Length: 423
Picture (cartoon, rainbow, N blue to C red):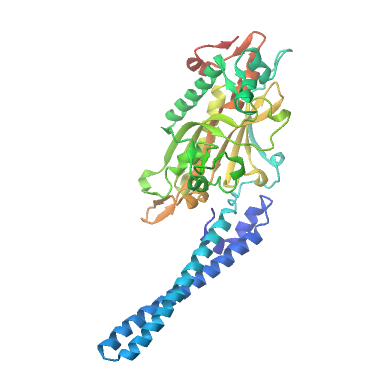
């Protein structure tokens, strides 16, 4: 979340930046800063009363020593009244802190200066486009028909077992999934990311730490009896490994990766644009996460984007890179680049990765800090990216590499699949 110090001293710039999201932040900022004034005023009153209490307590001892018992007893009664006032103010202070915390959690991150203004994905900026769109044969099919033809994915079985959005992979479809996961993990390892296998359920503190709660509570599956949430991405448990930690300067950067299934309710997702693998409630993804010194985080962001581009090149998929506008920017992100692959059979772009710099927004929630060169605690910058999410990659691989005789497997992936063609 945004820091109170920034809100106090840089409000006009924050208002202007949040306006890029199409958000009038004034009412919420007014509320936060008004609570802050009350909280600081209450704290001063508490401090003054405690100082008065301490002075009176010392005076009581002096009075007793000098034999002025009656005066001492009267002053002791006054100290008792002071204690009651302090206790009442302490309770008021706790309430104000809770109100302020709740209000701060509702405030999204401040967009980076390079984020373009805009209200929707139509306003996103195309940064680069790479690769040649394939020309398919006359009988080319979308991936859901190819998956059925080659017995790779059973969508109906998934509906029977669980519901829509929970496909069953089988045969070479299952092998392709496993091959892609290992391929992505190996490439992340070669790039210096340490692999973790984190829990697939997290507690509410973890969800708040990375910003999924309360913003995306309705999109997360919730195990109510245990108050645990199924993870929407490995970003949540991986970043929360460092919740409450104070790192040394030499510990940074931290580079993590992990494969997990991901669970998203995706309420209201219907129609042809979500057919097949285009939008699922459960899917597999390899995530990369970095903790960086603030001065290095935007270089790290570019490195992460280039890492994802390298994966798409090896998979021989045409892709483009987008800089998200303010209206399409995630709640916690300061700057996000989306990478989309071309779906030849559907004739449209499919998002396969989001790479984001959250600056100190998550770190402030997590209280994840490091000692800077002066030895003072300072918030880290956190970053994460999909490298990669599997469903739409599989969709693009099947559609773009289909021929009249089967689906060709890219050369880089063949050592992982054990086959070069799906027939």
